[in-house]
Length: 198
Image 1: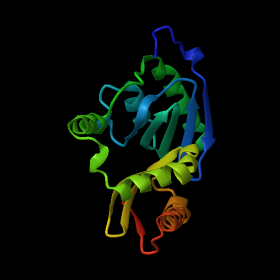
Image 2 (image 1 turned 60 degrees about the horizontal axis):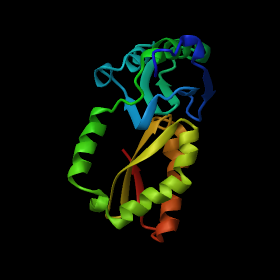
Image 3 (image 1 turned 180 degrees about the vertical axis):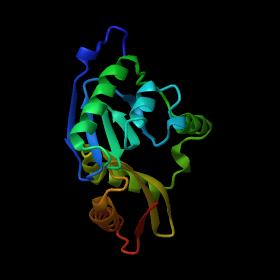
Image 4 (image 1 turned 120 degrees about the vertical axis):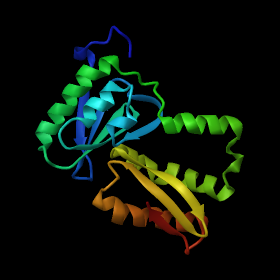
């Protein structure tokens, strides 16, 4: 974000997600230039006034950023209209000083690890699972303000973690989970695979 950016130049659109307790916001400026980030506590977001202020909005439980999209998960204390107004106000006031090139502690740690070792430590099966999710599942989840991260794949158990709007979403725990499991089973030709959200 350059110093010349003003609040009036920040444009925000919002949309509902399949999760009744999550709202997705699209901004005409980058929020995170590389990767994605999830914040649930103010202490995770030091040095990021935008995130700190969003987490201090009444009822906000989680902030998820990727590219120019933001997903706010909340507890329902505040009505949708008031939540949208509050988040838009924060985006317009704080985006002018936000650095979209930030890295979370996890990203910095992963970058240090990756510089010490390449991706060859991932099994061929794990790489294939990532490719399948990139091609089939992630585009839909990301369009709804969410995502899925693969934690591990061992002994026919695929452990995943939902992110953004997918976290705590009723459809993520039922329909989406079934879809992921069925697609992975079909693509890998293994009907014994069980997908476990953590």
